[in-house]
Structures are given as C-alpha cells and as structure tokens.
Image 1 (cartoon, one colour):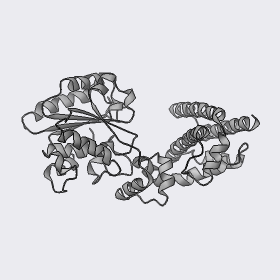
Image 2 (cartoon, rainbow, N blue to C red):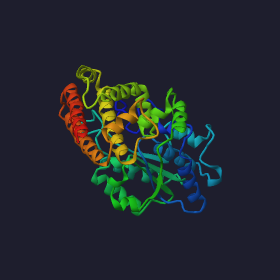
Image 3 (tube, rainbow, N blue to C red):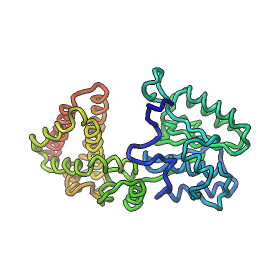
Image 4 (cartoon, rainbow, N blue to C red):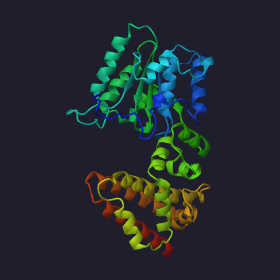
Length: 363
C-alpha cells in the first residue's frame, strides 16, 4: 500500500491495535481462546465479533504473537516487550503474519471501499513464501465485513482447506453480513462493550483523558474507539447541548436550533457534522428503548432520562420514535452521499423530531 494512504485498520486518536500493550475488559474472550488451546481445540479459523472499537483487533494481534512465538496456553497472552516475535509484530514486519485489509483503489489515490480479490492474491503469495519458514503462521482479516463477494469466496476456500500450521482470525463488526459458510467454518470469540471503569482504564492507556467515564460509556456504547472520538471532539458537550435543546419539546428554541445546525456547516466542520448525526441517532435509539424498558440507569447528559421519557412515554410512542430514527438515519446517509447542505439537513432533522414530539404530546 502507498505510504500516502492511511492504514484502514487503525482508529483515529488511538495507538494501533498491534501496539496496544494490554487488552482491557475482555478477559472472558482471552480465557476462552486459551481454554481451547489447552484442550487441543485450536481451530484454524476464528471469528472475533463485537462492536467496533472494543478490542477485537488488539486480541487478534495478541493471539498472533502468542502463536508465532510457539507459546502454550499456560503462559497466557501477556508477553514481555522484548520478545522478538512481539517486536516484529509491533513493527509490522513479522514474516509469518499477514494482515488482509483494504488496499488502494484502481487509481491508487485512495483506499478502496472494500477488500477486493487483488488483496486475496497477496494472501496466496504469503502462504507460498512463508511455507519454507516452518513456524506457525497467522492471518488477520481486518475487517471481514469489508470483503466483496469475490474476496469472501476466495477466503472461504482457505477456510475449507486451511494451510497447515496456520490460524486465520476474522474481525467482524457485523458478522450477520458474512457468508453463512464462512461463519460455520470459524469458532466465535465474542467481545463485549466495556463498562465505564474498564473503558476509562483503556482510554488512559491510550493517552486519552476523560473526566466522566459513565457519560462517555453511554455515548460510545462501550467502545474505546468511539469514546476516543467523542472525547477528542468534545462530544459530551455537544450531546449535552442537544439534550438541552430538545428538553423544550414539544417546541424547540428555533434560534438555538439554527445555531446548532450552522455550527456543522462550512469547511473544517465535517467531523462535527458527522458526530452530530451520530448523536441524534443515539438519542432517538435510547428514547425508543426507554419507551419499552423504562428510563436508563446511566445518562449521557444531565436531564437525558427525563427527555427520553418525554419523547417515548409508552410502547406506542417508542414505535413512533423508532420509525423516526430509521427515517432520519436513512435521510442522513442520503444527504451525506449527495452532499446536501449540512445546516439545512440538521435543521430539518431537528424540526422532524419537534413534529413527532408534538404528535406524542397530543395523543
């Protein structure tokens, strides 16, 4: 891959997973892998599932280092920093590790939107060239969700007839989108969203300071990657402003709504625009859930629980909120795809929420 293109397997604001010293909050998944190894059930294919940013790639690199160093389960997955195999992995230069990921597009000026069959040909070459080494080999697919049909079918052949002494680890944020035959060939390791305490610990390890881990855990859905994005973009303040604005429903303060929308327009506001869309989606999702299950125990901002209950006081209202969430989510995707004016799009979304709240209040 060209040095000018970003690495698609890293998350902004965090160390690369291969460089992360400890995996925090996923002890159950680690223990499950080690138990399988200790019991002689080391599958050739593993499917690491869970939300984006909870440590799937970090676990994959930890397992790779463990296997390439020839260690058994009794040692655990922690390794000394001066281990030669671990050092090569962190440098991205281990000859017996291949990372299957998105490559450049046909022009070579940006990343392809998918993992294409051209990248699978590189995997074939890796198997051929590394066969003379004699040691264990590892392949990390990051992320399997991004394979196109041709690449997925090519990988399936490797899973059906895996090369000797090789472990393939597929990272999947949404495993339901994978071929059923791929899922059936892999043993699943499920990674869970992080609770506030381990999330704060993981952020501290990554050098991200955060004062309100509970609120951040709510907004990031237990994802370290999502939490880093929110913390570095002052997302908690933005969400608090959104909650404060909508707390005036069934009528919102139009000047404040216009100011919030205008702050997401113009050059340099792209990240704020994307984050605002995500936070609106999150708020509506939480409101629909609150209408069915009651107000949440943890809040993303002061006054959020009261707002969620007002938006969806019962199951019927929860369904209306869920329908609006799906409608606005689709509208946001379309608007970004065709470059609609961010300010107009966001103001329209806020007014649609107002219209829905007016209907709920009148019911």
